[in-house]
Image 1 (cartoon, rainbow, N blue to C red):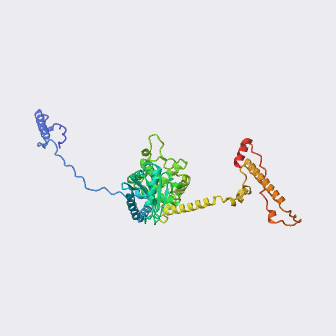
Image 2: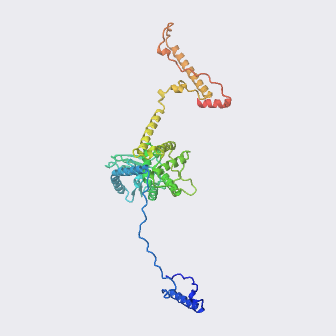
Image 3: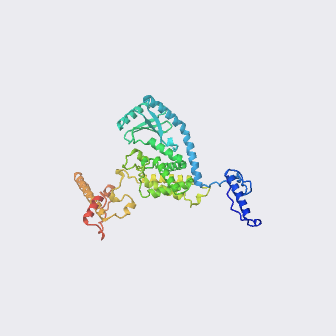
Length: 468
C-alpha cells in the first residue's frame, strides 16, 4: 500500500543552504512520489520502509464466570423436568388413541382429518390434562344442529371400541363437544371445527410461537398449572384460569420484563415478578385482558375477546398469589438455605389452604329447611348475642313474629275447642314437656329510638319491608 508522505526536511548544515542542494532534494522527492504512484517501493530512501502489521494474537478471551441462579430457579427447572417425564408415560397411549380415532373418522368421512391441539400439542400438559381433538373437513355444514348431528354419528361409531370406556355428548356448550374417557381415565374432548369461533388450532400455533421465542415459559407454566390445580383454580368452567390465559399473561410479562431490561433467565425471580404483576394488575378486580387472537376472528371496530371472562374466582387467585409471595420472598431465611426446599413448602401450603377453603364452604352451606332455626331464636349463641343491625329491621322482625304468634294461638284455640276438656293441673304440679313447650318464640325487645342522622320514616319502612 502507498506509504504516507514524509514532511519536508530542513536543509542540513552541510549543504550550507545552497540552491543546488535544495534542487537535488526536490528531484529525489519527485522520483519517490512517481515510484509510489506506480506501486513500486522507493529506491532512494526518501520514506521509511513499510512496517508489516503485527499478527493478531490467537488467544481466546477469558471465559465468563458461570451465572449464579437462585435456588428457586433450580427447583422450578427440576419440577418441570419431572413433570415432563411423568407425561411421557401416557404419550404412547395418547398417540395410539389418536391413530385409532383417525382410522375411525376416515372410515366415515374419508376427506376428514384429526388434529390435536391444546396442552397435549404444545408440551405444556400435566399427567391429568385433557386430550383436545378437533375434526377438519367433516361435510356436515355449518350450524349447531349440523355439528351436533355429526357428533352423534361419531358417538355411534365409537360404541364398542376397546379404547372407549364412556362417552357423553354436550350439545348445549358454546362449541358442541363429545367427551370420551379411556379405560386408563384419560379424558378426550372431540369437537368439529366448522366456524371461526373454534380457535383451538390458532391458539396452538400462537402458543408454539411463544415457546420458541421464550423457552423459559415452559417450566413456569408447568409450575403454575400444577399450583392452581392443587387449589382447584385451573378449570375455567368453575371460575379458574385456563391454560391459554396463563400462557398469554406469562408471555406479556416476559416481554415487558425484557423491554425494561430485567433479568428473564432466572426462573425464580421471574415467578416472583409474575406474582407481583398479577396482583398489581388484577387486585382491583379489573379482569379484562385482550385475546391476541381477537383480530383474526373479529371485525375491525368490534370489542376484543376477554381471555379472563370466565375467571370469576379472581379474588381467590389474588389471595393465593399474595400468600405465595410471602412464602417465596428472598427476604425469608429459607431463600438461600439448601436444607429447606421452597416449592414443596409452597404446594403444601396450597393444599392446606384448599382443604380449609372447602371446609369453610361446607360449614357455611345452609342446613335443610327442616333443620333451620327460626330467625328470632338466633340460630347460635354468637348470633343470639349480636345486636340487631338496625331498628327498622328489628321492627320488621317483631311484626312478623307477632303475626306468627297470633296465627299459632288462633290455631291452638280452635284445636282446644274441638278436643275434650282436660282438667287443669293441680297447684304446684309440674307441667308436662308438651305443656311447657312455648308455641312460638317470644318477640324481641321494642326497638330503640332512631339515631339523630337516621333517614325519614318512609325510607325506614322501605328498609323494614326489604329486611322482612
